Figure 1 (spheres, protein in one colour):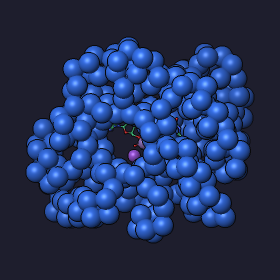
Figure 2 (cartoon, rainbow, N blue to C red):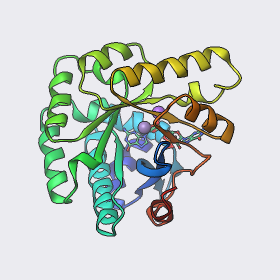
Figure 3 (tube, rainbow, N blue to C red):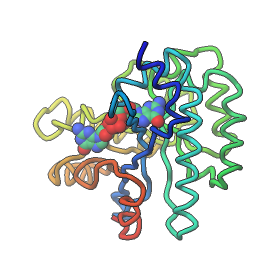
Figure 4 (cartoon, helix red, strand yellow):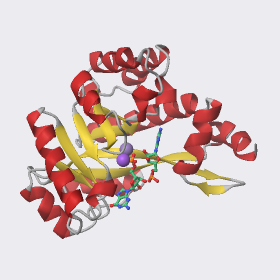
Length: 253
Ligand code: G
Ligand code: G
Ligand code: MN
Ligand code: NA
């Protein structure tokens, strides 16, 4: 396959890059985190969307090296911002395939040390498909991550089907309500019920809650009134290259 061949060379070619999207704390009204999002601009294929190439990377196992590259690059950037007096929590998406084996914990620890990253400023976003795909040592991997002092977040919350058992059985620090629930939260009553209930559930379980895909000030107001902790979305900022994110960290929001 053409894409597989190109993807194999992507790290070496330096055609991968990260953009960062701010996450705003609604209580402090300032940016407290960013999510790292992978971009691939290939010489031959042009810009390929993550939704297209990540499944290929997962199927071929290339996601292991790519995922390590993402982690190291994101930690390096977070460390750089911290040295500039702008400490910010760094969230990184992790695919299940990427950390199937025990080696992952060791590699994660190495990257944290090498980049001089504060582990408590690092948050790994895992999706609900994570456990379904690796039932045997999923728990072990997550506990290993926690032992390093790294935070865990459930991404796309509500779109899978093992959601509640995750909250019950795993050492999760936060959850991100999927943007499909946020988009029409003011129009569709069912979305409103789901969003307000998930916020209450998170609050009662002592888990932080982040709303994704916030595009309007009306939705923002709704989320504030309903005691959501953090938001992320185009209303504040789209994902941007690091030097364009720095001003958001300086202003606070
Ligand atoms: O903006 P966006 O198109 O960046 O991202 C699309 C999807 O790709 C999201 O679901 C996101 O979680 C996923 N994604 C983005 N970057 C990464 C990454 O570095 N690793 C993994 N595993 N998924 C990513
Ligand atoms: O990892 P995750 O599935 O959460 O990836 C977030 C995705 O959502 C990325 O593709 C990112 O570019 C996209 N995104 C971020 N903010 C918004 C927004 O306000 N609206 C929409 N439609 N997409 C967003
Ligand atoms: Mn994510
Ligand atoms: Na998501």
